[in-house]
Length: 322
Image (cartoon, rainbow, N blue to C red; front, top):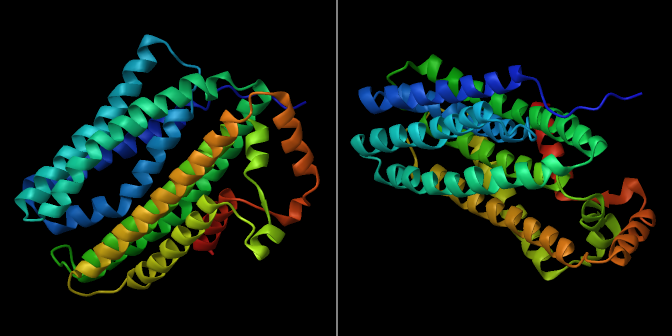
């Protein structure tokens, strides 16, 4: 008999919190010294820190005691405020005005997306899942898929750090590699977040979001799905360019940052479209008739012929490791 899991071990939460503290220390050192190696290392592990923080939000969905809430919001403060303020100050002092503005913009985004939206999903959606669904979410989505997504991020991080070690800690020849690593990992973060949200929705919503390969072959898609596919294609092209830059030793190039920004915006909008489609299914599911129809459609599609954005995230995670 399978044991039910209502929360992950505190050890996982502690590891995620220590990664956040490490990120704060690195950005603070950069803000004080303005030495480029602090900036490059912080950029290299940034995606791993963000992913670990996202996973930590959902690891103990039913804990509402005062002690855990204090820890929960302290973790958020270190992640979203301390590290971003240090990044903003360091970038501004070092003359990177664009990076400073980006840091200032990210603070309210983190507050809305994670502190309000993420906490609400944790409290009102995930905590109310059945025992079987919660076990599947924590073990399958958070631990298995979350860890799988972090593996290629770690690979890219060490690739950038190895470039830094070979060129010397005072060299700026690895900034392109560090920026490319950051944006490539950001794409994986968006797909991982989408996968977590997908697993937090009812089963009939997940089934309604599945496409058959026959529909893809005939391009029998909704208008928003066509836009989403185009955005994923643009992101893929930008990612190919960024991947070609990883490990290359050259002077800083603004084209790398531009390609990363375009890819990040495209995949961010694509994931938002997916969320909008899921919300549309939920709104139209006021009766059991819709759910029954989704189950019927699901049964008519061969499992080997299904396709969804979650398959993309799994493929990218495993492909990057290989």
